[in-house]
Structures are given as structure tokens and as C-alpha cells.
Image (tube, rainbow, N blue to C red; front, side, top):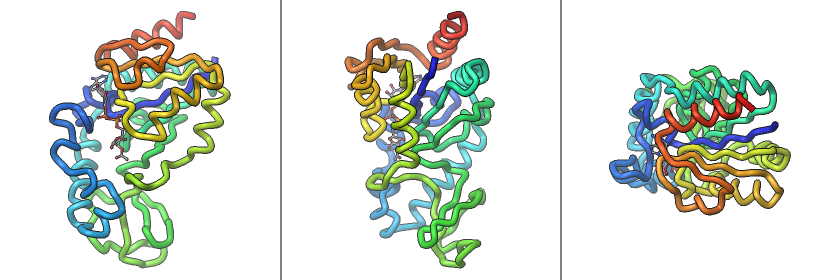
Length: 229
Ligand code: OAD
């Protein structure tokens, strides 16, 4: 049974990391065009770095929850058959023991040179004009994907989706493309689809089945069902 799992901010909510679009979500407090676009970065890099420095510190202090742990268990048991595609920039899937994880929106703990594309582990705090260790350009940015940029490893993701038996979407509002389109991609290729989310999302009706509840309850329940098959 080949399973592709898409995760979003909802899976890390019970680890204390904020979501984006819920009441009190990050985008209600920070205008996304100022902190998560190439234009915002060009206008005010200090503000953008401050936003990501704070999120990096929060993510580093967070611990994986029962939902991350359940997915790592599923991956270990269905060895080589599970791919976790996450929109999250935290590393909580890996902290729970998952190994086959694609961070389609990048990672907070990565740094990227905007000039030469060199990547290296991010320092705890980035400052404007930090030099790239490879080319020396004062162009260090977080290795995260901003609105208007292409998510990472899309070819691999679409290939895995087409070959899957089951696509599961966990803790994501389905508001941001291309991830929001994976359910239709999968369904068009005959892949069964399941949504696990706190509440019905805008795209819930596109799934064969949608279950509602907090991730720390409904993800371990679903994994237990899968492991009992
Ligand atoms: P959103 O904030 O848009 O959606 C979070 C979803 O998680 C909502 O549907 C909530 O109902 C659900 N949720 C909240 N708490 C939950 C819980 N305890 N258990 C289960 N579900 C819960 O976050 P994303 O869908 O991840 O991109 O957002 C997608 C992208 O938009 C992010 O990767 C980010 C953002 O802008 C970039 O920054 C490029």
C-alpha cells in the first residue's frame, strides 16, 4: 500500500506552533505580503528576518506530538511505501523519527544564498546582509518558499501521487496551491483520498472521505486502523 501524506500547520498546532488562517493565525497578525514574498524581502529584509528568527526559535523549542509520532510509526512499518510531503517549515516530522519527508515550502533551519543558491544550516539568528559562506555575497535568506516562488521537489511529489494507492491530507486548509490541488491530481488518477482536519476545509468535498477532530486524536486512530489491516 503506497501512501502519500500531505501535512500542514494543523498537525503542529498541538505542539504549540501557530497556524496561518485560523482565528489568531499568523496571517491575521503579520501581513503575508510583507513577510512572505520576494517583494517584502526586497523592501525590508530586517522585518522579514525578524519574523523568521522568531518562528525559528519557536520551532526549535517545540516538541513533536502524537500525530507526528503516529506518522513516523506508519512510515517505519510500511517501510519505503510512505512519503510525507509537508508544507510546514518546522522539523517536527523528523524529530518524531520520520525519514522520508519532503519540505515543499523549505525549512526554517536552512539558510539560502539569494545570489548563488548555496544552502547551509541556518544560524539561530540571521541579520540583514549576512555573507554567504560560499560566494561571500551579503544575501543570506531563510531557505523557505515565499508566495510567488516555486515549491520544492514538485516533480517527485507529482510522480509519487500518481503511483500512490492512498492520498491523505492532514491539518491543512487547502487554500494554498499547488498543495491544494493534490487531492484533485490524485483523484484524477484513481487514487483514494482522505482528509483529516480539525474542521471541514474548503476542499473537503473533493475527498472520498473526510474526518474531523484534533490531529493528536484522529491521526493516531487512523494509523492504528492502517496497521491493523
Ligand atoms: P492554515 O493555517 O491555512 O490551515 C491550518 C488548518 O489546520 C486549518 O484547516 C485548521 O482547521 C486545521 N487545524 C488547526 N488546528 C488543528 C488541529 N489541532 N488538528 C488538526 N487540524 C487543525 O495552514 P496551512 O494549510 O498549512 O505557506 O497553510 C498552507 C501554507 O500557507 C503554509 O505552508 C504557508 C501559508 O501561507 C507559505 O508561507 C508559503
